[in-house]
Image (cartoon, rainbow, N blue to C red):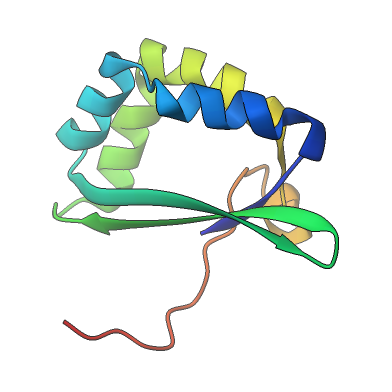
Length: 107
């Protein structure tokens, strides 16, 4: 997935993730997400966040609904969402992150 990052919020975003809340990490695991990484990249003067994770469950939509209902996760998003600049397609669907199409994978 990909989203923009406000340059003036980069330090705060990094600080939040350097000390991610235990309740958020627990919920991520409970929702069957593993190997979750977020990367920052500057492209043509703008900053972007790229995330990758592996989903190991059988009901992605249900697990994402469970995560969205979690009060700790919702508080976390209140901290992280204002640091981000959703891409136009994501914003049109009232989402922070834009899902990217996978064109290659190997194990």
